[in-house]
Image 1 (cartoon, helix red, strand yellow):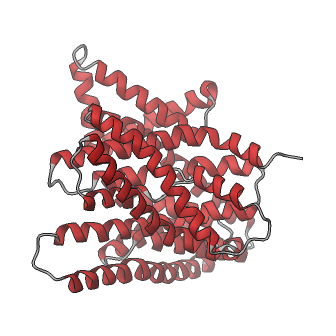
Image 2: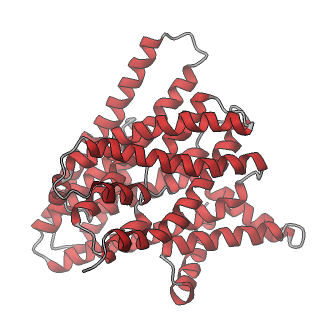
Image 3: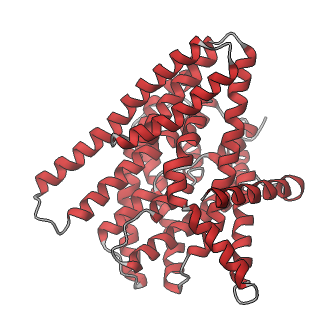
Length: 418
């Protein structure tokens, strides 16, 4: 696996160079598109260069997208995203972020599940309601990576930027908990357990994973901050302690059946804000932030390259493609519904509700976590797994490329510079 990961890093670095010098797309989008193009070339070379085709397939298989992201990269990426978020600005948007990341995810899961279930019946694809809801759960978390940089350049308000960034940090963890809950229902569907015991299990799952993850993140975040503060004159040791917190904290959370993603977000927020404020050593702060920025950029590059390369895992089928295209419309509609309902529960002073809702809806990109969750579904029926993976990939590809590349124009149209 290490050798395969090393080759992926080499390809990601080379593609990043090509994109920076000539293509000039946002790096994550450029890497994903080049990954898709490279996958197509590899598949076409199957009969001409069978050894090369097999070598490439072995690399992608050995890396194991789901394990690499969920058990490795995600801890660093969420921690890196959280340490750069201003906790005071986030606190001002706490109710918006809370409602979008909780109620919004639940609404999106239900709307997507019900509509994709109906669409599957119309297209002639066999998909049960529970697996349709499972798709709703895995596709609901949003990924702001390709959007935040564009929003900052466009000069949108800090309030709007914080809504998008704050929601995406927390809804990954909430989405995983909802996904686990639906899987629990699927597993219990044919068991003898009653509804009351099942609901109790789901309730305990939420308390253990979500609430437990938040509390555990606060605990390790404060402990790590105290240690880092005591050696703040040693920049290298500070970085090592932060890396250990992200990796070790996530591993321990998983062992305790707590939400690792939520724990990393809370720990990152505490460390990023407290340490950057308390440390009077400019060089230590600079080293700390630069290391994490480079690490974040590197891992995001590998992630989006892997999304592109994952194209060869798909089983192309006409019905799947039609359902995937319908799923794009369904996910966009559900995103609008899951934004406007929570948004309508809050008070707003600027009177630009539809502008904000439109940008939040179109800016809600889907990324690697959705694909990783699709790959993690236990194989009960091969066709069900193939369908869910195909429509997930279709939505993610459209989301990152079309929405990611057009969000800048939408910002300019909605918020023209005076």
